[in-house]
Length: 524
Image 1 (cartoon, one colour):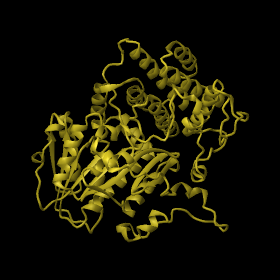
Image 2 (image 1 turned 120 degrees about the vertical axis):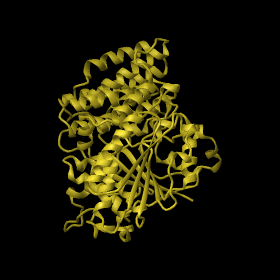
Image 3 (image 1 turned 90 degrees about the vertical axis):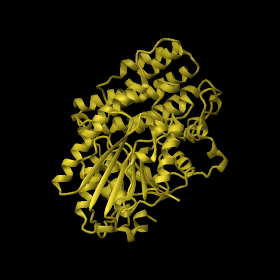
Image 4 (image 1 turned 45 degrees about the vertical axis):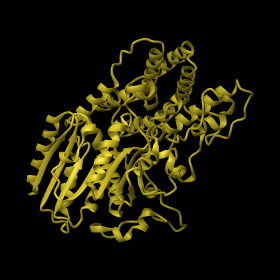
């Protein structure tokens, strides 16, 4: 049963919601609305023994990656690289079929993966390969598509050589990749460009050569600083990539649902950035006559950039005044999250308290004592809800190959979305890919230890972690899911924005590739 049908009692102020699809006379779902289909079969979560939850390190490293393979055991290639050649389910095939002659970035990566596996298996006992959904022949593809497929194949071959420290052979393969890739080409060429650079950095690091890249921690700090300041690049990308807005609006709706009936509301935001979510929140509150909020308090938590946080507060106060809303804005600064305490907040027992965490937790995966300290404080203040949005990918595996291929699919979807939503000559696209994606790819592929600061895990891992604090996942209301659809529909490329349900968690993706997860939690 569709989650929409399960939540009719929660329609809220939106009234009767439209069907997810329309059926023609033959009972088939119309193509125009297929993309709205939610599936509860996105991913089945295995129940891990409780004892596994006592070791945080193993919890965050064991991300149960879908790519079950080891580079040094090519004798079992069929199972090792099954994700690279795994066909979409019929559900995905309907929604993400190749339209016309253009192959999606995901399809190119899978085809390149098939070629890569065939290249490896040809030297290992002539292992038979499973049937690929696109077939074994590349006839019918354009010359450029064949080059792109070969580019991915050689990129994977180069990564395989790096795992064996065959750096000379890897460098020759990367020389070939560099001839066919560039930072200004098509999505596959641009993707390969940054992965090739990262592989060269990894080889340099493992050869004892001092990296010219610098500190991964510094990269993340600079990125956070840019994200907190209004600028043309972040604004353009936010406005044009449908899955960014589609993820923010339902998160805000989850806050509204949690504080319904309260006259005093306090939102603690763990990563406020430019505060766009709170302008949406204030508009949502003001537009619903059944919500009479006498006072709204927002507390922004930060470890640096206090001045930028205060500037965000100034903008939000100005916006609140423009709609005649009483807003109090506070900044809770702490140099080290180990010093995070309850007394940082001006708590009022009469307030409806909620916590909003948009991509705030992943940065502490490598500092688990700090993450645990944060969660203990949140548990003690016992908010009505904690809304959590994180990356829906496993990019923290200790196995290099797992990380490499996961990242290839994940950032491939981002490059594909920028191709569809921004002009190729748009400088905001180039800045986004070089400053944000390029540095993240470097961290995932080339860095290790403390320098590998970009660490993401999927909702399965967060569930296990949150269970340590007695957190229970709650249903997202019908209104929240409706907001996600509504925002995607409004944008030109919104039909490529896909939604699935993983238990009670909303997975927002691009052409079927998971990008973000959105979930709501309460403390038992």
